[in-house]
Length: 376
Ligand SMILES: Cc1ncc(COP(=O)(O)O)c(C=O)c1O
Image 1 (cartoon, protein in one colour):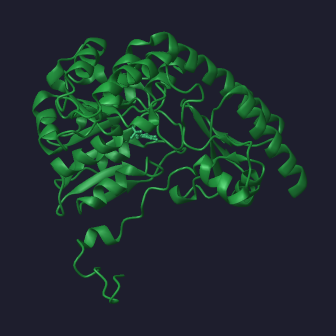
Image 2 (tube, helix red, strand yellow):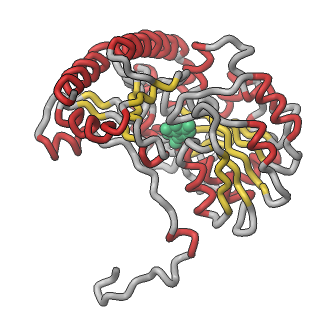
């Protein structure tokens, strides 16, 4: 509404009106403001409880002297390091302002108002939003046991389908599909349909699964030029606030992505930190070990409390609290624990809990125990 009471709803692009904006986890500072709490555990955004690698922080400090200059829009140094790590060429890489930006750019490159984009029920929220932004029809395929039904997604492909978004593992459910399922799917997808395999939690999943259980998307790029793999520095590398992600694919598609992205979409501090973080494999190992211990800690407590969960290979778990889930969420906030309601995904009975440090996890467990005792 403008000051003279006119609205812009009849001039805004029609598809924008229907967008349900992404709902982020509640920031710590907001809860501090609202409830005046000082001791807060944020387990709401699948962030890294160990922070970032000290080497990434050092790289940021070194890069600070150059902040008056534009960053390297071609991200040469980061791409070269990534190319070596992944055994791909520099031309196969696009760097994004978080992988979020890249997921959306794929939609902008390939889909328009006459097209369809397929994703799974309970799939990551950015997929339907990306479809809506470009005016494409989002086709949501019912999940099986909270995970992707790849055969049904395949069967839903029509001549209008431009993109299929897959998350492995998926957020918020933590479910995964295995190597055979992915191979069967990819071998039948028409070559002109772009498959985006979102591997935001690849490090956690790889550590928990055998190679045959968890496919590495990069392995399939030479066989399937229509496959794009997206990854991020926000999770295991602990750089969520810096916003860096990357897309790996065939050089032609990557060139289109680079044509539409903003010239300096990733800032210099983020580029420097990501490069240093990538090299610090010891830090990522520590993160993974902590995650495994934390997952065990939380699952043991849930089992003692007789609370069901969706088995997860990520750094988070969705727990079933029945019809009181939202009430319990409110009460957890009052105990200083921020978790994530997932009612916006249709998972009204669930709360998603990110795995934190031992102390944060215990804060959550103790708060949940006392709330449940009180409620029942
Ligand atoms: C499955 C999945 N993909 C992509 C992202 C986006 O991450 P970022 O934009 O921070 O790289 C997230 C973030 O939570 C995610 O869970």
